[in-house]
Image: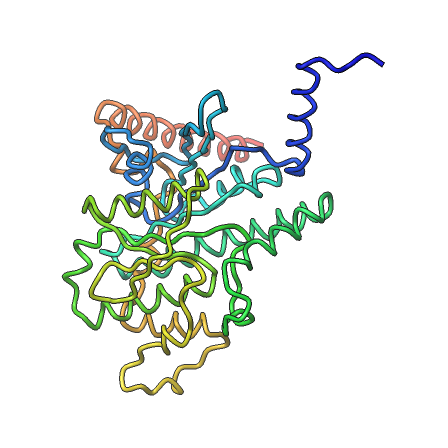
Amino acid sequence: MASETLWEIARAEVEKSGSEGDGAEIGEKSIFFIGSKNGGKTTIILRCLDREEPPKPTLALEYTYGRRAKGHNIPKDIAHFWELGGGTSLLDLISIPITSDTLRTFSIVLVLDLSKPNDLWPTMENLLQATKSHVDKVIMKLGKTNSKAASEMRQKIRSNMQKDHPDRELIDPFLIPLVIIGTKYDIFQDFDSEKRKVICKTLRFVAHYYGASLMFTSKSEALLLKIRGVINQLAFGIDKSKSICVDQNKPLFITAGLDSLSHIGSPPVPGNDIRKLHANSPMELWKKVYEKLFPPKSINTLKDIKDPARDPQYAESEVDEMRIQKDQELEQYKRSSSMSWKQIELDS
């Protein structure tokens, strides 16, 4: 039997390392940014990729990527960045980047605009429910073809919390890494202290319940660097920060698994009369307390514009004038067609 050549040995090593990953791409991860409209998602992505360019409004679903060198003559790690535009108006697009092929290397970053507390809960609730529902479906599908991979994902996300943590059986974590980022802290810090308390405690509860990390940021260079470190950890596997800040008078920074229900406390109900609130779950109770202080806007004003052509941020005078003209021509055509059909019916 002839001895193996150097190339044959190298090929065997590559195939061996590939099989150990059970099909998962080595050195490639994906991060999906969702959240408040005009909340700063694009700004965070550009900052993480060291791109000095003005952020542009995100239309529908956008993609970019970044690379990071691991060492000499070693292929660079690749991070895929997906961003969902339109706030909560394009939930159907969530299913595009999250598939059974990408799920094992996927992370979610939910960006919330702290300067708009009345929009915060409905934005957070709609996006998290839609994302969690789709992730659960994909994992069920993955479990049918690769039960080992699905089981490993469930075990891995549970490992973020210590085995003896008192809340281990009381939470319902996302089955992929989740980070919640509150932006525009520079505006939020000037809110009334009671309002800040409710927002901070509520977000801490939601993040802890879903097994997520929580942090606040603004235009401050120091805060942006901390956020960049967290995103780099998701994208390239850099060591996770163990620092924590739960002081409501400072920007929150809480890594997944380090908070607890006992430290968060009960929902801040005025008069401490929590028994008057009827709720079927802890999440519903927190929602009622939050919306009592920050009632969501009416459906008509909160609902995002589904047709980007009618969104003011994409206005172009010449195009818009032509659109109006075509709309008028269409309406005129509809009226004339309707009259023609009525005349035919009369004649018959």
